[in-house]
Amino acid sequence: MKAIFCERYGPPEELQLLDGPVPVPLKGQVLVRVCATTVNDQDWSMVNGTPRIYRLIFGLFRPRQPIPGIELAGVVEALGPGVSQWRVGDKVYGDTSNGGSGTFAELVAVPGTELRRIPEEISFVQAAAIPHALELAYQALVEIGKLKNGERVLLNGAGGGVGTFALQLAKQQGCTVWGVDTGEKLKGMTALGFDHVIDYTQQDFTRLGERFDLVVDMKTKRSPRELLRALAPNGRYVTVGGDPGRLIALLFARLLGRRNLHIVALKPNRDLDTLAPLISNGTLKPVIDGPYTLEDAPRLVRRFGEGRHTGKVVMEVGGTN
Ligand SMILES: NC(=O)c1ccc[n+]([C@@H]2O[C@H](COP(=O)([O-])OP(=O)(O)OC[C@H]3O[C@@H](n4cnc5c(N)ncnc54)[C@H](OP(=O)(O)O)[C@@H]3O)[C@@H](O)[C@H]2O)c1
Image (tube, rainbow, N blue to C red; front, side):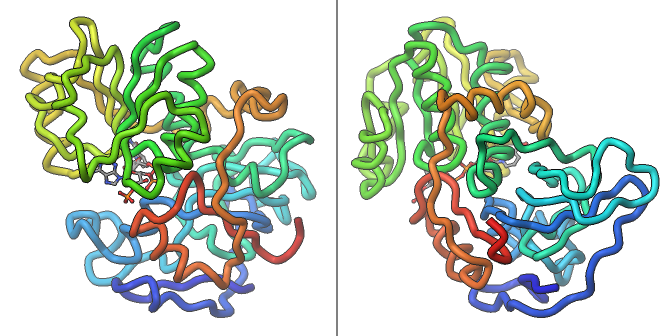
C-alpha cells in the first residue's frame, strides 16, 4: 500500500510517498481503507520534531511511527480479533490521536473504539474534516466554556479548523463573535460570518479595550495576566493549544485560584454521534481547504505549518470517493 513516510525530523519537503507493508489489525483494531485524511498541528510537529520536547512522545531521534496523519474517513476493510461493533464495508470516520497515527496512507489499522459511523448525507471529504476540529471546538466552547445565548465571544487563531467550527457553534447561540488571525484570512473570515475581525500582527486583542464573556484560544501566546485583562467580570478563558511555556503558566495561574482559566484536554470522538446530525442537516458545515491528493502531502504540511490554509486541509486517498 502507498503511504507518506517521515523517516527523520526535517522540512516537510523530505516526506516521501512510498510503498509500505499492509498493516495487520491487532486485537480490537480495524483495518480501514482510507478515502480522505487531513493535516493537523500534530503532523506539522511530528514532521519537524518541534517543539523539541514533543520528541519525548514522537521518538527521540526519529519518529517511532513514520507515517503522519491522525484523522480519517474510509471503509472498513478487515477486522482484528475481538471486534464485534464493525462489519467489512462500513463507512467510518474518526480522530485516531489516542490510538497512534498513520492515516496518510491507503490502509491503516486503528482501534475500533476510535471510529464512528459516517451518516449517509456526509461525504468522505466532509467526514474527514470533522472529528478533531469539531470536538475541540465543542468541548472548548460548550462543555468547558459554558457558552450562553447572546454572549460576546472572541476566538483567537480563528481561521483554522477549530475556529471555523467554533464560530458556527457561537452563532447558533446568537453570540457576537470576534475572530483574530492574520491579515490575508480576514476577508474570508468576514464572509464566513465573523462580526469583527482582527489582524494579530497589527492589534493585540488583550488591549482592544473590549471585555469578552468567553475567549477561546487556538494559539495561546500571552501571559495569564494579559489574558485576564480581556475578560468581562464573569468571563471565561479556554485554550485548546499554544506555546508549551504559556500553557504551563496558565496551569499555575489556575492552581493559584484563577478558576476562570481553562485548558482543554481533548476527548477524541466522544460527542461525534451527537453532533453529526447538525452536519447532516446543514446546521454546521466543515470549512474545507481542498480536497487535494496524498501526493500533495509535503506541500500541504508546509502550507499548514505556515498558516496559509483556511479551515481543514483535506486530502483524498486512492480515488474511492
Ligand atoms: N487540547 C488538546 O487536547 C489538543 C489536542 C490536539 C490539538 N490541540 C491544539 O488545537 C489547536 C488546533 O487548532 P486548529 O486545528 O484550528 O489549528 P490551525 O488550523 O493551525 O488554526 C490556527 C490558526 O491560528 C493562527 N495563528 C497562528 N499564530 C497566531 C497568533 N499568535 N495569534 C492568533 N492567531 C494565530 C494560524 O494562522 P497563521 O499561522 O497564518 O498566523 C491559523 O489560522 C492547536 O493549537 C493544537 O496544538 C489541542
